[in-house]
Amino acid sequence: MSDVRTVEPVESGAARSFASQVSKPDGARLTARVRKRMSGPGHEFVLDVEFEAAPGFTILFGASGAGKTTLLDCIAGLVTPDAGRIAIGERVLFDSAQGADVAVAKRRVGYVFQDLALFPHLTVEQNVGYGLAHLPRAESSASAAAILQAFRIGHLARRSAGEISGGESQRAALARTLVTDPAVLLLDEPLAALDEPTKAKIIDDLREWNRAHRIPILYVTHSREEVFALGERVIVLDAGRIVAEGTPHEVMTAPRQETVAQLAGFENIFDATVDSVHPERGTMVCRLAGAASAGPVLLETPLVRAGVGSALRVGIRAGDILLATSLPQGLSARNVIPGRVASLEQHDVIVSARVNCGEAHCGVEMEVHLTLAARDSLHLEPRKEVWLVIKTHSCHLMQK
Amino acid sequence: MTIDWQAFWLTLQLAVTVSAILLLVSLPIAYWIAFSSWRGKFLVEAVVAMPIVLPPTVLGFYVLVALGPRTPLGRWWIALTGHTLAFTFSGLVIGSILYSLPFAVQPFAASFAGVDRKLIAASAMLGASPLRTFFRVIVPLSVPGLITGAALSFAHTMGEFGVVLMVGGNIPGVTRTVSIDIYDRVQASDYAGANGTSLLLLAFCFAVLAIVYGLNRKPWTVGPVK
Image 1 (cartoon, each protein chain N blue to C red):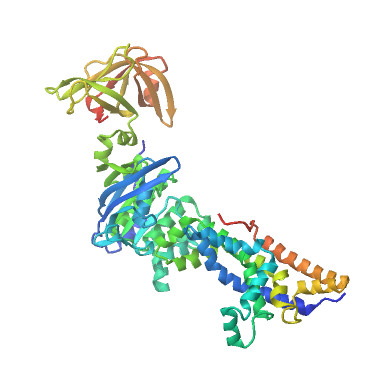
Image 2 (cartoon, each protein chain N blue to C red):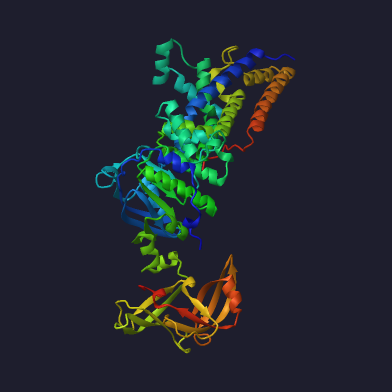
């Protein structure tokens, strides 16, 4: 898993030109309470959320169809909520109780769509100047030129918007929106189509801009890497509801909901029942569901408030599991489970091994990620006998 | 073989006037058809499309009655100008506008509806009023449809017969258009003259449509707008 932050920071022209601007005091917070019944082909759900976004990045994270884009559309005014209230500071944009509904063009909400929607019949410069029609011509072209420079697309000013590359279009779309000085910025998976280095550079520029313009930025993504790279705060949406919110670390490393767990990348999620509790050790033992005939697979996990026999779920990241080819001794890890390699698959530089746990065919299979070097030095191959080593605190318990 | 050039120029004048007025009149109608979410929209669409299927004589008859002294419109015009609208060039223009309306409105509405809604939303997000969005985004991206609509209404007016006959009669230099001229010649067994004028009209309409198709390589719709 590559973390966008690890890409070397770019000593950018953007940094210089944004820094030269006088930083404004923090902008107003966005408060939103939105209820909207959505019906699409084959599914119907109610978007029902309430949250606040302070100046800085707030990530809206969720699978597709969770209601992220609809929520942005409601804030932008492109979709009218059934009920709720949306305000930037004291300025009310929508309030079903008061019958307030400010026109899209007057909301001062910047919105960069997933498909960018640059005007294909205009040049890059004309696109960026589009939202500045209220300014005198000289002022508008000076602002447009400055932001084009800051986003490093000054040389493309006279090119048609239809003939520039994906990354350039991305920058042009951001510049076009940011130049209008919005009070809130909505970004709908703006970087989804870009390669990692391009993405990282644009994120750097965006951060730099946000340091000078302290407004709330709602950033929609379904990419875990982007959550960690960007997030000061993350809100997880599932089927129209907020299921978790907090810092990326809080939300993504200790998820209490299975949907969050799947999104956060728990490759291994098992149904389990509590077999015994050991308050004195701060742990408990869970029995993983598998074929009843075979011997049970027991896991020592952190202690949670749950009685013996209660049902819960255990999530384990594939990268948190160690493999050994002989029974390891003298380990701090509490779980050493025998198993047999079922299959090995290579994805890029990661090897994904599927391992049958316990006695043959007990039905519990775990996914383990290791490096190519580890696979080769252990001579791993299908049917090879191995031991899985799992730390107690790598076992994440979730409500069922 | 003589060609009635007076009739030809009159027809050309009529077609240019009508398509210029239609270009203006049809823009708001087409915009409304393309973007309104009113439930009864289909009724308006049906009314606009009627001239496509209605016999021109029926349309001409009602226009004639509406322009005459029996209606408020006709009385108002007489009070204003001292003569009736029927059997005048202005009356012809009004009849032709109604007759060619769908040939302008439908291609316009189809191309407006074809503009990516995200671009329209983007324009609003950047603070543009609906009017500015219309002229800066929708119209520039609908140019092929606008050209098609203007050319179709032009060519359609060039060749109209029934409405002209009902509303305008056959006054040389005022309401005698090419198609009336051809009809007259056939009635008088002047087949050679009818042939000459017909060929001229045929060649002219072909040229107009060929130019439009050549400039604007997109199929045009004369069906209902989806």
